[in-house]
Length: 254
Length: 331
Image (cartoon, rainbow over all chains, first blue to last red; front, side, top):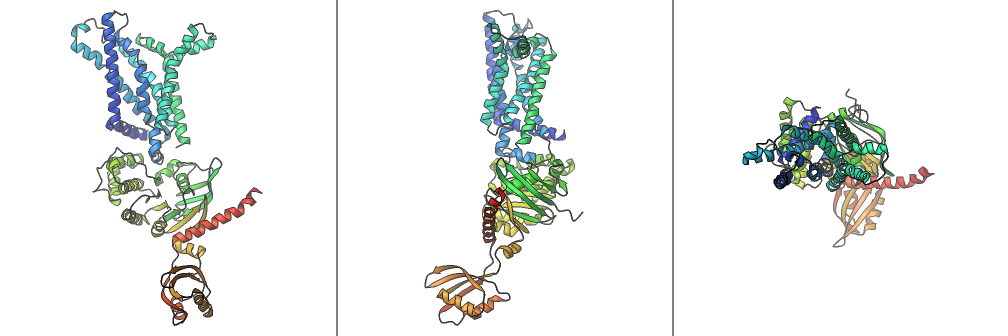
């Protein structure tokens, strides 16, 4: 445990002194700012029943596709390719502490990025006080639900990235692998249900499985305030399974 | 307790698929010794070192560091070893002192001693004044190497393993590192690998020559000389016929063989002799070879075979041995 905190501190420090982190953060915030603006514009033209916050978080997958691979591809593959993973392994540090610290570092940064997006509604409120009179911009319940969703799904997304990074020594391969896996996890479930809707034949157990994997439905539920334990279980168990596999991988091929 | 060797390796074998990297390697190193691992590229030096430091597991056989089995208790072993890998990987965007403090924490140096331990290691490696707050990425190769060695020294481990510490350094820096290794003698057990022979010869008490995954020779360089290149060697420059020299030596009952003869200008030649006689040969040779009409002796010098020749002889012998034994194994 002591090693975990030493490594995590090191990890965060390295994140905050490296320029790519800031570049990723700026790009992320620019993109999300633009999306938020576009959503608000859309609402001006055509009144909508859903809150801007809910609409905003329903496009969470766009940044996930590029931020998660960028954030995690370097973590283990990079250390392996320059050889510092070897030097790390010669200290009395457990493999699990190495993986968990990498995960925690990336996860903290990922959540920090999302917390920064709270600036958009706050800015809007500051600049257009009359817009917030209805209280639609910063309604607490959907915000809390959405953040809870991001926090739980983040466990899975970041561990996908860490796992992809642990199986290879090339950062490029790690990035592509995590992108592909994220795509399958996020879009795959939806596509399978589309097949079902289009009259495809899914047996009953398949329907149950597909429903279980509907990430977008999870988001809908969370932002409406329905906190179900099944998604929690899904994200946390799959995430920790992947982290466990990564530990085994670096144990086998240090 | 004093009799426990620092490192003991028994029948260590490691295979990468069909390739056998090391095969039944046996050796032991006593506390305070500086031992050099010598071998051509791909001989299994790095593999042996990686197994000893617990990064990699052996296919079969066992290794003990300070009496603790590496396979059974890798964590305890890692506390006793300072390891500097080949090519000395370092993170480029940290400062030297920050990096060493981070490493000291990871190596479980107690909180109060971290500062002292880091300062001590930097002092030994001559980093304290020159490169303390420099970013590692901007350091020259020699300084990077010193940072790697300082890292291996942190926490005062009993055994220090360095994989090619002098690779890519200029002669000044090599000398600096050699002095540094001399400083460690007696306090730590040091194992270092290299394929630069004078390097090992000067800094190590004992040499282990490894070729194609097998230990082909082990001992101090004097012992190895005795084993692989016995007899006294002399190098001389004579003017005149080479055959006359040989017959003259035979006349005076020298058991001499001319190993090498190089023609020099002005009808001179440089001869390398091996003489199997005992006793004070230098003056006897000078007496025997002077005042002869067929040739004139210009210079005579004893010639100590250097490690390079021993190495070539040992690896050549191991090649022949493995070729000879191969049919027996398959039969």
